[in-house]
Image (tube, rainbow, N blue to C red):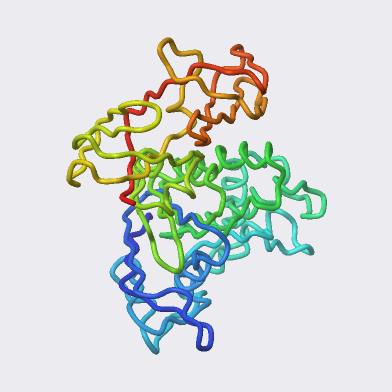
Length: 347
């Protein structure tokens, strides 16, 4: 059973400090959703309020039409039926893997608990580890067990609080892909919290970028990258650099790199001064008729190289190119811009 969550104008405070204010969000059955933001932005506080670990001072939290939090009323966590996956796994060291997975199945008999544990562990690829103990597992395996335990009672909603942050980079990416597939198979509504945009883009069908207790933009990952709604989102999502420009028309701007055109129309008056966001994939090297720029640095990434460039006007650009185009720092190269999604901010 997948769940529908509605968060209506909630406020959460610690003492006199307000962490989250006038926060609203809603999503429906079987969707994978993510809150993304820097440390201290309030994303974990929102998750804890949904789980029932934090009271709210205003607003409502509604799960499948039932109010589970409001001012002065908090349904206890154990009565919400929400699955939770923690950053530190929170497995019971004295229980076997099977018993950890079946721990929340209070109404099931011993045989049924074992059957469900076997089913859940097969789902996460650990069917041969039923009788092991947590200390006998790797960090990635422990996290899979934690996910299996959260899924076992068929909750309407699963909350995941930076569950992969303690793992190394390669293992984290593989595990995120595997867990995403498990959640899709089970059609489990999920809210995932992270500060890592790579994780957010892999697992989140919709992603909310948070800042100072508010959602700046709730959107598809593609739109967050190509159509950020403000400077914070543009800076936090992906890499890029801003250069100055003057609006020449609704879809074009004059810059030190020439006239740039895109497919986004802006309603500002002609000659409005703007800052233009250029992503590394917008900046092309070795372009006939381009502008001479100096390569000041390069970062080899295997299949690609990230180049840092300085324009004749002193602006800095980034360019991500296939690594067979091998150019050394200190060389000059002709640079052109291919920015279909032309993102500008008024100065």
